[in-house]
Image (tube, rainbow, N blue to C red):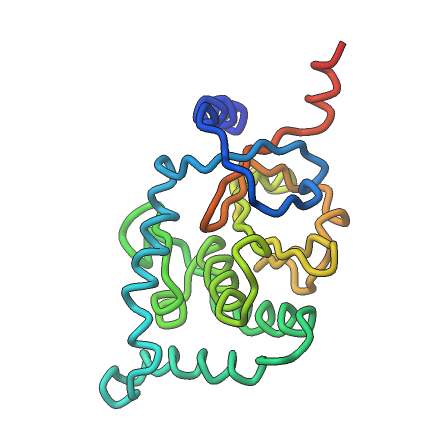
Length: 220
């Protein structure tokens, strides 16, 4: 019920149509999707991107100036450097494995608030929860040259666990690949049946998702 109410709320935000120019991809997890460029409601997302950009200078700072834990930023940058020029699918696999080594910790014990979206610096030094894995993977791939159109953070409902979840989807070679802290391997989204997307988002647009069955029932 909460998922349906959230969908109804987000549908009201689609009054501002997105301009032409974004790359169109196959829809995710068997859903229809509607695109918008109205990013105002997604303050956690826009704020974490802004914070990340303000922290980028720390990625090249000497470890001695930052402290031992913050050297993980330098380790991350060295790791990304080893992937430069490699095939995209290989880069995706490596980034997923690298970030999934971090420990899962919920926001309340980690940050003292119920929901906090972390930058890669925060995630690599403090670990994090599902959207933190997805954000770190997304920004890793963006640093490797993937375009904004190639990646989406997807907020969804895990129907098996009856819980909200967040993952990264990456488009490579016409396929939608799932990078998920709950699934060790990288798989195509078409192989996963227990996820129901609420919305997906990148730096340019967001998409409202509705089940295809819901769409077909509405047709005459």
